[in-house]
Image (cartoon, rainbow, N blue to C red; front, side):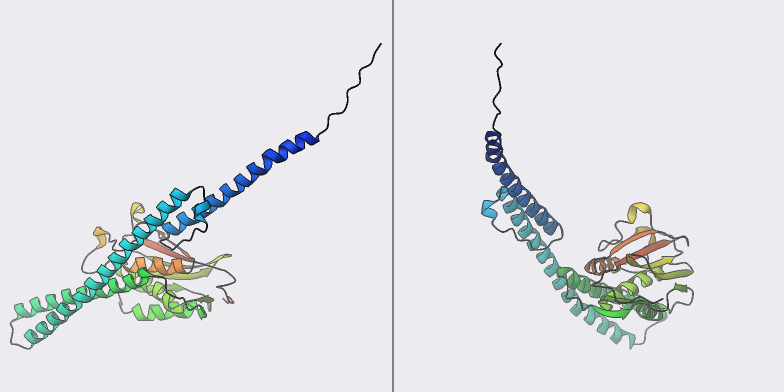
Length: 307
């Protein structure tokens, strides 16, 4: 009886085939992943209205897409620049006729007028002052929106900044300001801009509060929270995402008493974003709105925290 013996098959042909097929596929996958990563960063840059660079785009699988993104970003940049220049120019041009109107009203007030005329002039003066405030806020927002300034990050006492803001704004005796602050809270940030955030939020709460405003500053494991609450009419849930957009006003709460032009909270959102922070609004236990600012606790931002 003959016994057939099978000769062992060599694995080298299979390994060679795997190398021949696997190396090109692996290289192609790497290049595809590289281009996807560049495209993702480009999309994030366009969304943030920042400049983006795509090197070696001539070898990219997504060359048509990247070219389209570049054209789109150039168009967005052109439109934004034109809008900012228009806003700045119009705002500056407003100042001259406003100054003339103020001078004319001052001249008229020196004349002998009856009570009715004096009332009309007082209303005109109030309207001119309101326009001047609008122009100033528009110029300030246009300056902040044009480009991110160089932040002067220094260690500062946030508690001191909050107390200073409260002292500046606590002139309305009908509103009771309650604060829940630690003894000291040191944080590395641009004190000028962070103080502007505190002042805008506290001032906004005072405008819409009925009788009291509560200011809280506290630390969490990964962030510092600055909270401002009021007992006003609050903000509808569907409107909360829009209050930080420029020129957003809620019609139900907009009147001569509260004033404002919808730029204060937009400035807050800009400054907080520069500090890699977050912001949101929710309902307060006091019955009104509760604005929360979260600043990250990072080694590059944080010094020592003392309560």
